[in-house]
Length: 249
Ligand code: SF4
Image 1: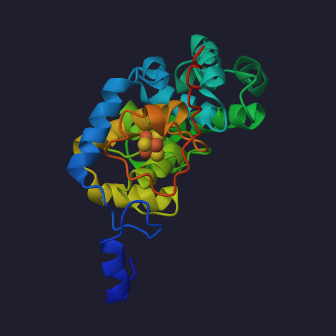
Image 2: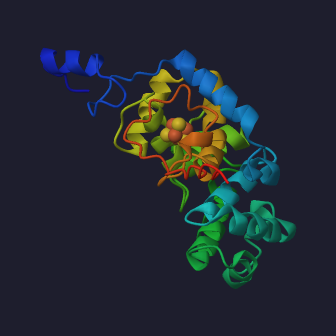
């Protein structure tokens, strides 16, 4: 990070949450731990965990299907596909058209069907039919980006990995735990800062929190279980209508 001039960095250090000035990470890791514990006990398990049950191949396929697709569409589509093929061996025996029909209406279903066949074949050719457990190896598979690779390592293999998507990036910045501009930068900063026991849980709880409470527009700060710790950086909470006072008759 570039060094700031002394005067500016002093101002930032002392900035108040609503001052409009950037803050020097006002939330420490201990508080972030309280936030994540609270969110973890607030929301039920993300359906991805139920669906894939620590099976790296299912995590990989479900993740690819989930890109630009809502969970309500991805979950039943994945279930239909896994009922027919849940291993690379079985998957390459299906035609692209069969997979397309099974996963429709997920977004980009034709492209995703072909990607699933391609990376399943590569798993058989180059990895003995097993899903690798390193980010670098996973990134060699067609259609697999950093987000999916991290989720496969963390959720599929149970190894330390931080999966940063738009929810993790947005909420960590709003909380004031980090100050980053892109999800990639967020991943790197969290790897430095976030205690390892929270690596595997952060994505699951923040996806749910981002979908249900800390929404991109009009976050529901008035009912948020972690509002007491949040610095609400650049946040415009939803407007809450106050009940009209009862008229005296
Ligand atoms: S208080 Fe508001 S901005 Fe902060 S985490 Fe909760 S919903 Fe998000």
